[in-house]
Image (cartoon, rainbow, N blue to C red):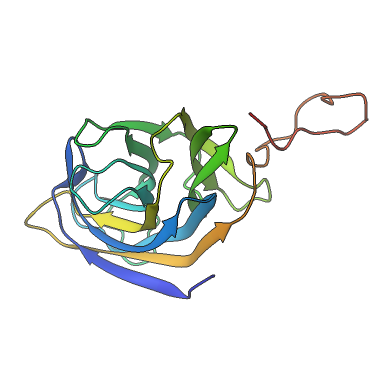
Length: 208
């Protein structure tokens, strides 16, 4: 279901390390396949390069919960409508464990996404971007798990200012919760040669 837009005002030290401080607008999304997406922008992005506006799948509201997220970073001080400095995929694999991240080196995308796929006894988590050019979703980072992330999750928009003494305001537009059976994502760019015997055939999904 799509909503118009959300404006989230947030403080917090960061979403990183062994424990998170942030504001979270979420729904319970259960244990089925789920893709969460939104169009990010900043109203007031503060003065820290690591302020984050992100879509997040999370096990619980505990500070050290496992999570998987796709974020745009602020800190540009460019005012309303600013989309951010860069895109960053981040996750915590174990409760109260450390955090990991992967930078997206492409252009700032139109839409951020994160999805979970259950297949053949494994749970696949993917951090996604869509640059709005017609190429569809592209994968920033992905992981496969035998047990983590397989149960009921929360899904929503997370915002942190990366400073306890500072507030930011971030927009989440066109928030989408998509459910059903879907595997993989559309290829970002056409390949130089066809992938099979049929001319023009292009692999668009991957099955475990």
